[in-house]
Image (cartoon, rainbow, N blue to C red; front, side):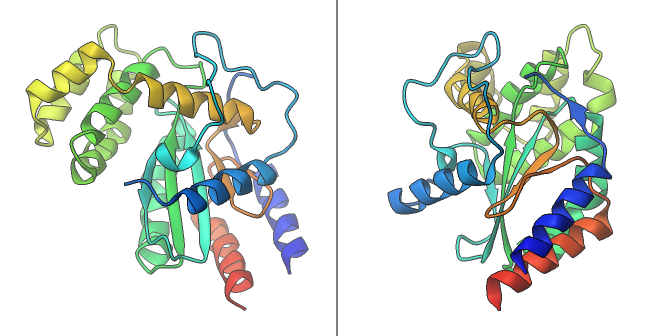
Length: 243
């Protein structure tokens, strides 16, 4: 069964499109397991150096302290999504496929999903989007979910903007963020360590395009897979995990 799912993931990945890129914290036991399982799911990478401008981590990166988690920790299936806010295929996935997966798998307790946004170096305003999202996340998960949707929906507006930060500030205020806290977070770059760690981790596990999905225990899946195909993959993985 596992080999059949691995082949299905490979076929699905070859049939999708991706943006090509540059080369509450759980318990310690869970943290170590997730990190190690992610690394074992990743293809071997000969280039583990972080992208230019990203500080190399001083110790092993702990993925459970990064990104945004949805779903129950008791779910039998775990998925890590690595996306760039500037990627058009990532936007397509979040607008068309993710709402279906959230309802059918995440909300149903079948899948725990980690959204890990990072900067793949292709889009000049992605660092501003990352900073805005992280600074809203600092104020709570509900606000972040609203801001995250706003960033995806408004991608055409900010992606090519010559002055993107005010766009994000306006949306932060729109979703109800405390603007004094948000502004100080942005100006002080308080979330820089998390952002750099996420971007360095994607290099460590060999991500070469966005979106990339790690269904833990299986080969990575690259590209905006059509909704029905993604549903089939998760159904197979769930069946294997609960048989």
